Length: 114
Length: 111
Image (spheres, rainbow over the protein chains, first blue to last red):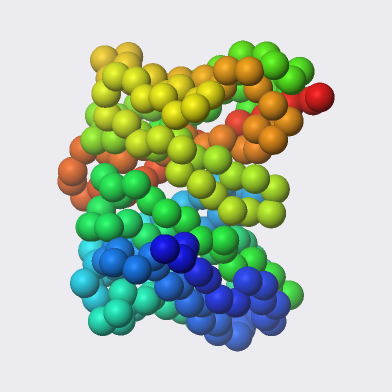
């Protein structure tokens, strides 16, 4: 089975712009979670989608949003980018809902905001 | 105070040594994950456990629910084990039902 894929792998944006990141889960996996990793804060949970519905959300401002499609692929969007949004964004898929299941991580998208 | 504390933050070992990385947490949990992150970013899930002990090759993970503590052991360490090891806990179901991560332990194994 192919692993979790994320596109693009690298991205450079300017403050104030918006960005959309994409995640394709492992075939058959229905849950997709998004995480942000920064040197200062480490890994932090953004949100989880299951069956096209957001099931859980971390402590991030409303500028961070996401969605999931019927084929379980997921996108996350960050609007009005700030310098502090520079980070590695990781998605992880699991067979069923919730982080009680093993998480399979993608390679990440490294976002740089200038 | 972080809900998840890892120690040590940095660890340097010689090839062949036995390695122990510790994780302590402050809340009741449903499960605990151990993750490995190599330079370049990719994260691999090593173990998920809610009680007892699990073993996979040279890696062993244990958890003591009463003491709110988990350890990751690496036997016969090898330079390819050099990575950041991250502990993550999943609290019991409730409004905070999401993974909370430790800051990670950077392991360097020298040949």
